[in-house]
Length: 261
Image: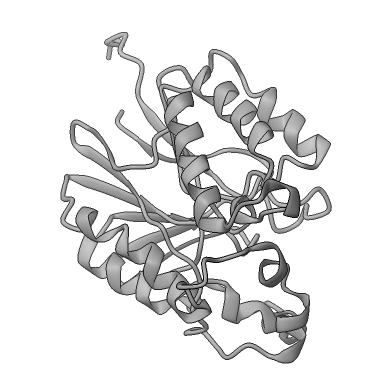
């Protein structure tokens, strides 16, 4: 069969690149300048809490991909005292920078494909937090929320942003979030000693929204444990780049999750 000469469009996904680490940053900034010109990139959160570095990464990626879609993770919403911000104001600045750089944080439609970013947080619906978690989890110190947004309402605040997009339908629908929509995405081999972090991995309410949206594929991040598993008709994919030391549970590359060829 002769080639039509049409270059297929592919969708790649990655999360948790943590570009504050120099080797992770170099990997991202040195991605091919021409290999992905026809492709879409899904960034499922946790690039950096540094806004200037976030902008630098955005500009680099939009110059290499046809479209870049992003949803913030928990690290993006960390604030420092000198920023004089709360985490909601930080989110507004992130959205502003994304818009300025040409990064999409809203649903994107390409013929028979729709990609839907979903905001979320955690709400302890996976498990109750223990004292070790409450004392060690950095979000509890580095995220600052408005006084009217109590801890147990943060996830509701984010999920509310998704509601207007849950009616999206197409031949292929891909959704993505930073946080996990269900705890059984964590593999059974995770040692019990590490399971104390499960309460801050995601929320069951996000999964309820997924059931309304009914995507073919859902990409998530946060756990730093790469997975590809189908549950109740949805293919769940985690392609976390991870910290430099995490070489076994991460493939350290982009993951192609869709192609129109």
